[in-house]
Length: 277
Image (cartoon, rainbow, N blue to C red; front, side):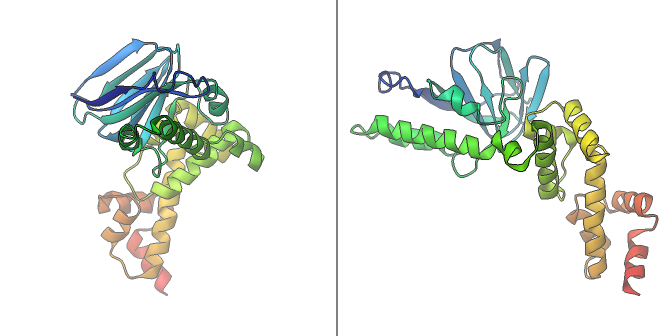
């Protein structure tokens, strides 16, 4: 169901730099799909809940809450709501001379259109724009302020020049972002597919560049990092094996113990007992 959709072409018709065309929000039905097709403007979808896929060329991305995807003009795009957990998303459509130069300052591209939302700015844009619609005297200025705030947040969230500032190329920047993501979410039930989708990359491509840079695939890196954190918790001697397991991303304590022994050579209990001596 479309909650709201408003055409703002008239208020912005005299501003070629950044024109907000329309916005809206929808609770999608299971399997609801759009495309494959093209548009003559930019359109961003922000995923608030549920899941879905986006397909651009040979790349297919699975998105979940907190992520967004950008449709580029004249690029064939297809997207579909998950049949079990269909997504709710909001969107904004826009164009203008300032858009392409701004996007060039990010890691986004037509082939890699997925990005994490800036949680301070992007989830609330639908409400901000709808509220601004009530301001007859300065409506156009509010629209413009919200849109430039969005573009600024986009550059800060996934800046292309992050690689340049750290002396990294784009591939190394992706690896660096991957490591940061794994460190932040190791206690959750995450997969390499989710990591790739978060970065807007193909899973096989991400695994290849990660292994080339780190010497192991991301799944192995995640396992090692989880067990490193597990060792730190076991050494404290104040948590049960089950609590340690859940703290590092394993809901099954037996699976955790099996993986721990396989990598460390001893069981979690033996490791803790040895640390106590």
